[in-house]
Amino acid sequence: MRVIWLLFGVLSVVAGFAGIFLPLLPTVPFLLLAAFFFGKSSQRAHDWLLSHKRLGPAIVDWQENGAISRKSKYLSAVSMVIVFAISILFGIPVYILIIQIVILLSVSYFIWTRPST
Image (cartoon, rainbow, N blue to C red; front, side, top):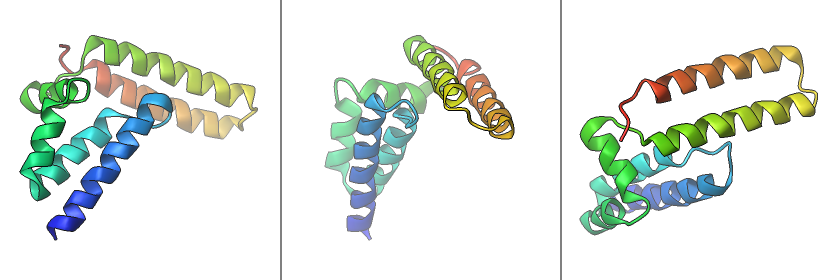
């Protein structure tokens, strides 16, 4: 079972890394998943992730304080606006745009009501 947890952890890190470059793919939730999976499978991988210079601080902030950095909040807001604008430019049907805006506003509300670091 540990091998499966480890595999899920590695896949989560890969998805999180891809999320750095793809605006629709969230980075931190995948890294939180990876921390969970590594915690079940490999202490070494878990320690590596939490101590990673770039990836670790967001995970530690979330685990200790439920906090999201102000920079991450602004980046998420900008990416949501860009994604919504792209949807409009592609002529997505109005009912889909309404669903999208409700989801984006809900996610934005969640993000901005978390403590900042």
